[in-house]
Length: 452
Ligand SMILES: Cc1cc2nc3c(=O)[nH]c(=O)nc-3n(C[C@H](O)[C@H](O)[C@H](O)COP(=O)(O)OP(=O)(O)OC[C@H]3O[C@@H](n4cnc5c(N)ncnc54)[C@H](O)[C@@H]3O)c2cc1C
Image (cartoon, rainbow, N blue to C red; front, top):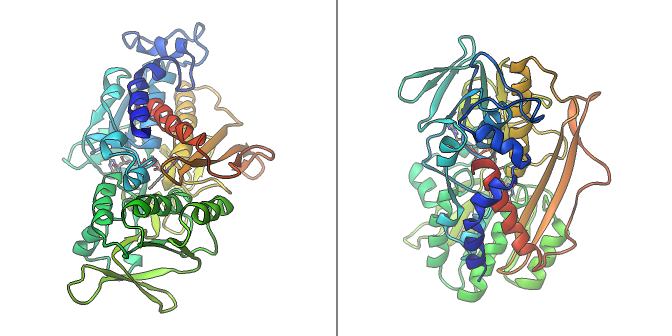
C-alpha cells in the first residue's frame, strides 16, 4: 500500500523539480536551462554569471556533492565549468534504506539516476574515483591516472567505516558476512536476506558506535524496521540493540515508546555497550559473536556491526581531516577547508558544529550554501555573512507510523560556528500514521533537489 503511493509519487519527481522544489523560483531554473546561455543577473537576482570559464571539480555525488554541483551550475547561470567525479552508476539513498529491511521498499525504490545533472544542468560527470588531491597544483588525480585542473575543489566523500576499531573485522570475508549497510546503501539488500533467513526464536543484534557518526536516529530506526518484519514472520525472535553511548541519541522517549507499544518483549535496548570485537561463532551454526569493551559476549544469528566512522578516505589521505585525524574543519560561511585553501568540504566528512547532525538534509544545505559562496568568490562578490541551514530527519518505526526531528542553525560570527536557533525545530510527540507519507515526500523532494 505505502510502496504503491511511494512509487506513484516518484513519477512526479521531475515535475516537482520543474516547479522549483529546489528552493529557487521557476524563473531561476528556467534561466540556467535555456541552452546554457548565461542568465541576465538583472532579470534574475538569484544568478551571478562568472566570467572567464572558471572550473570547479566536485568529488562525490551524494547529498552534499550532487547538490553542490547542480547549484553551482544554477547559481552561475551555466557559466561555471563543473565536473562531478563519482564512481557509482546511480545514486542510492541511505535515507529510507531501513524500509528495505522492514519490507516496505526495495533498493530500486532508493535509486535515482545521475543523468539529469548532465542533460538538464550541464554538469560533466566522470564516472570514476578521485585518488589524490594536489592542492599546490590545483589538480585532482583520477583512478585512471588523468588529472583534472580546478580553480575551486569541493570534496563530499561521506564517511569511511573504521573497521580497524573492531577486532576481527579486518578480515574481508567477515565483513562480507556482516554487512554494515551504512556507508553503502546497496548492502541493505544483503542484510535483508540475512534477516529473512534467520530462524524464528533467533537474535538480530545491532551495535552502535560512539557519536559522532552518520545519522544519529538511523540505528534505532533500523531496529524498529527489523522488528516490524520479525513480528509478522518470526514472532519469537529478539532484536537486541547495543549502544556505546549513554543513551539513545535522538528522540529517546519516542523510540522507547515505539518499542514498548509495537514490539513489547521483542526489542531490548542496552546502553554503554561498546562493541570491540566480532567473530563467527564456533561450530557450523552460522551465528556470530559480538564482544564488548567490558568483556561481555553476545551470540546473534544476524549481527549488524556499525563501526566508528571518519571522513571518507580521500579527505583523510589528502590531509583535510584536521580534527583528530578523522573529520574536516571548515569555515561555515564558505565550507572552505581550514587546512587547504581553495578546497571546500561538505556533508558527513565535516567536524560538525554544536548539535548539527551528520545527515543528508544537512549535507544538502551545505551544498547550497557552498555553491552560493563559491559562485560569489569566483565572481568577486560578497558572500552571505549570515547563512541559515535547516534539517529534518524522519524515522519510520512501523509499517505505518513515522516521526521526525527538526532543527534550524544560524551562523554565529563571534564563535565562527553554526548554532541552533532558539525556539525553532522540535520533534514529533510520538510516531504516528500522518507522518509516514510526509517522510516519503521529504525523500522524494530532496532527491529531486539534488538530482532532477
Ligand atoms: C540507514 C541510514 C538512514 C539515514 N536516514 C537519513 C534521513 O532520514 N535523513 C537524512 O537527512 N539523512 C539520513 N541518513 C544520513 C545520510 O545518508 C548522510 O548524512 C548523507 O548521505 C551524507 O551526504 P554526503 O554527501 O556527506 O555523503 P554521501 O551521500 O555518502 O555521498 C558521498 C559520495 O562520495 C562518493 N565518493 C567517496 N569517495 C570518493 C572518491 N574518492 N572519488 C569519487 N567519489 C567518491 C561516494 O561514492 C558517494 O556517492 C541516513 C543514513 C543511513 C546510513
